[in-house]
Image (tube, rainbow, N blue to C red; front, side, top):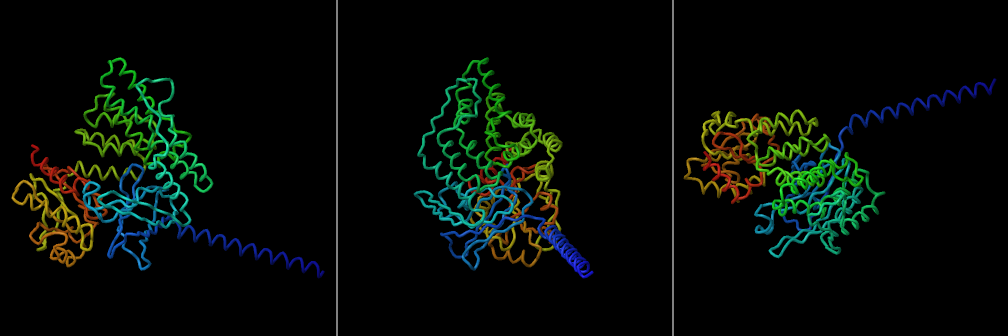
Length: 502
């Protein structure tokens, strides 16, 4: 009897323990679901050349090179710059920029890249030590990495340095003789060595990181393929018609079914290098094989690609090229082909940029009057979006825009609109009076106290400042936040071209 009671007691205790464990597990699962629904990346930067009041710009891009996020980070009490952001994508790229220290180098931009594009994955956490010096003699740059995600970044730095060292020759050439070999399956001694370096890191990398880095090795400096492109652009135009036709047909077959070096498609489409590689090949083919004059040919080639995942970023890249007269038709076709939410959103922005008249929006002037931008119809219009406290906005105005405005001050065919996205009226007016971002004598507006929720801002995907848009005389977008708008000479050139157009 005693033994039976004892055994019953033991069973009861066991049941209670099991129930408690199940409740704990359920609670933990709920906690994970409730709090960890978004992954993050965490980057800490120690920049050896940091000066007082420095800030760094973190710029994130997708596989097609479109900017997905920009954030300015100031130095912390520990002397480092800490960047942490939630991410919805599996992976992407980021680079780090800061103020230029030697403005005559690098194309005249006020910003310089101190860490070139890095491949991130959701959950990454890494500390980066950057030693970057820019002088009249050249650029000296070195980076080191530590933390739980350091291996991937360290490997890519080793590969970059090995490529730059030139310790092995690039011995693959092309003389125009097409054989039965697949065009893209030849690798140089440099690439073979770099693949060996990658293999040594295989156990330290995720499958995605391993294959993306492999694609960077195989496709970034593919000498055989690049020399074929060069041959197409230079020697092929002199070939006899039949010979040239056979050549370009073969090249197109290779482009539509490229060698992938055993890399899964799901990884290739995450690689900027691969996307750029394929797009560059299509442009070379369009240029020679189809006597490419307008972007329609390139768009038709991209549409013909059967793999949806790679076709989508390539379609988006087409809209970075020279604008087609048939852009409305191309946008409609792109919308029917693209399924990813990321690119659907971008297409919406592009449609608003190219098809919508920005002059139909309203803004508020310093006197509180609501003004329709159509007041400036039939003129070339530059819209400069800024906010009080934006260091890059002030720098752009002081170093570029102010000088350009002075140059065109007597030209009635162009107008410059300074548009603040500050919600606070006082903050906006203080920004005007400070003369950092605009002049009290300029044409100053505000986005109706709605900040980034104002239709002018929201509908045109203006997510950061400064953001500059240049309209033609018809009130449609000619340039939207492109590099040309942020450099003195190229901005003048763009304005003059629009002034001269009918």
